[in-house]
Image (cartoon, rainbow over all chains, first blue to last red; front, side, top):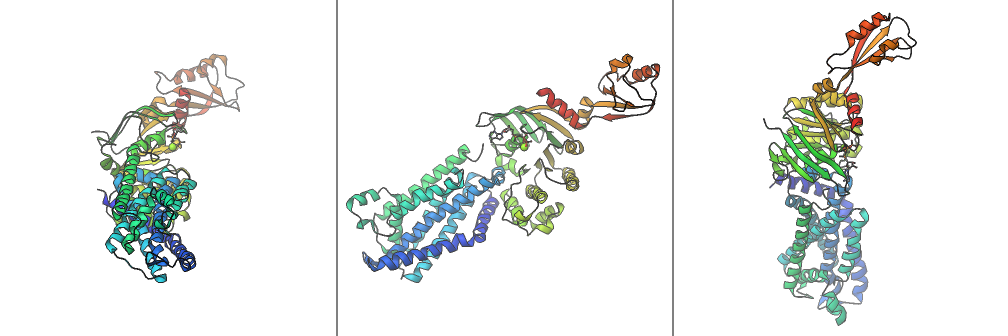
Length: 253
Length: 308
Ligand SMILES: Nc1ncnc2c1ncn2[C@@H]1O[C@H](COP(=O)(O)OP(=O)(O)OP(=O)(O)O)[C@@H](O)[C@H]1O
Ligand SMILES: [Mg+2]
């Protein structure tokens, strides 16, 4: 195991986050605060509570999830796409590193950033609403696993993309809609039965539901299903990354 | 002694269907400076990229220090440093950070003293805290060399190291390369500047259109393919070359006061004595004479022309 390489990549990626502190930390915090003002304050006056939890507090797990998904993807996809774009990837390809080490470095750094971000958003949310975390260990487990899974997903997008537009397209066209329709700002149980059934095909529902359960013990689906969905997605992404490196897909000519 | 790099029957066909390398066989000796010479698109970068693991070969085998580059990629790659042709750098990093990064990536524990030495050798020490994007082109080129040397490789690939580097710096770079060779590093460089190969290399390989045309010690190559020209400064102007001397294929200078005789150094007889005798017979006197040996450039242009 080339641990020096893992460390080098990880530090490199973390240093990038410090350089772009505005993008990495400040802007998601700002947008979360805006969500709070708009959804929490405005809609919160109409929907006072959901299943005994104040609306403002109810949306916190969903908001964290929303940032976690989008930031994991954008961080990891950019991290690997940029060297491909500038050509500095030559160094990575010619280095004595295994796919596992590359993934640990890049995805580890992206996931770390997302987890830190998630915690900052939680802290920010704590300023607006009283927070309650029933199962802190599970909360961290969901946070870390989701961050890893979606950083892996972002890594795959960063390898697949052959232009900056493609880097945006999946988060924009797939993840954002799925997250907004995934019970981030409402309980799926509030939907008419037909849309409830449709929602069950949305994987984000399982992630948000499990995460919310760790806060308030409120869940749209069984927690076991949430755990399974998280691991399932993680496994799927791992398999895809394994295939990419085995075939040299888009990395080598 | 086993060659440090052994390439056998190496072919590369890109996804586009273009065959960039055609059954290349090449051995690089330990500790030599090997120059790979060829026109644009010859396949030099492709060949280097395969050895370094950036491009997948289509066919054939590459052994580095006796080990297969795919099966033993870890051991093999940690021996190799690569300076790419393109100036690809991390614009936002500092010189120090990007050089240290390279060392870590190649599996070496941090060693600030070594990084410092490399940066000093390449006259980049004053710039160590500068962002890469603030460097000039020549400095970026040297930075790429510093990155490649950061992990103390035994083999160094330089893909057109002096492109865009001024004459002064080019001399510096040659000195650095020689010093590296003297410290035991094997160096493979590609170049368009023939003077570079001529100045630097122990052996030269000429490649064109994906085929390795020849590999030869530099001196042997010059001797083997070298033509010499004998220039005679005439006592009196000539209007034309006398018919009696036609068989020597002499060229008359524009002024009419020089005669140039081209001969092959490999030939059994150069014909010089006979020529001078016959000139004396024809009453053509000369006041001075000198010979020129064709440069690698001429040899190279000749060779490449023959393959067209
Ligand atoms: N990724 C690729 N896909 C298709 N063709 C390629 C690719 N890379 C290189 N080629 C082709 O392979 C041939 C050899 O290219 P290569 O870069 O190895 O040449 P070179 O000898 O390094 O040239 P130069 O002196 O210009 O750097 C060229 O015709 C080039 O167009
Ligand atoms: Mg080239």
